[in-house]
Image (cartoon, rainbow, N blue to C red; front, side, top):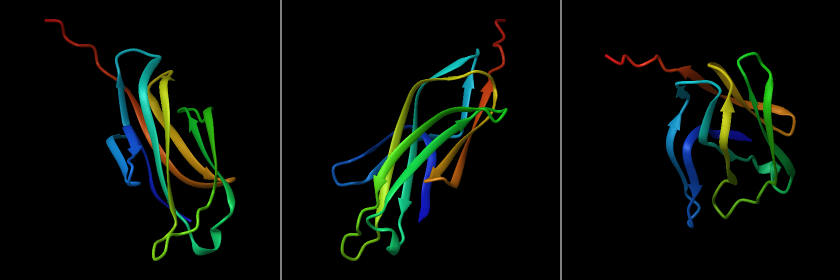
Length: 136
């Protein structure tokens, strides 16, 4: 198994032909006040499977940690590894939307990806406080 894509974005979907569309890839969030409520965050993952994995039941898990290492959330995505189409590799796209997610304070947050219980990847999100505007 290989993780081809693991990122955060403003929006993502899969069109009728199976193409993965990603808009507004980011790794930083800016806020004036805290806690900062982020209205919409998409977690996007593309996984390519090895030949011996077809038909297996697996579980993809996202875990978000705050700057102190405290786990804030966990999302499980159980799946069955699909057989490849003739002449192609087997792959799956996963899109998970988080709405109105609170970031309590500035700092470096980590979104960690696990398959079953094996750690596979990390996407960091830097949450930054905007300086006050000069009202001159």
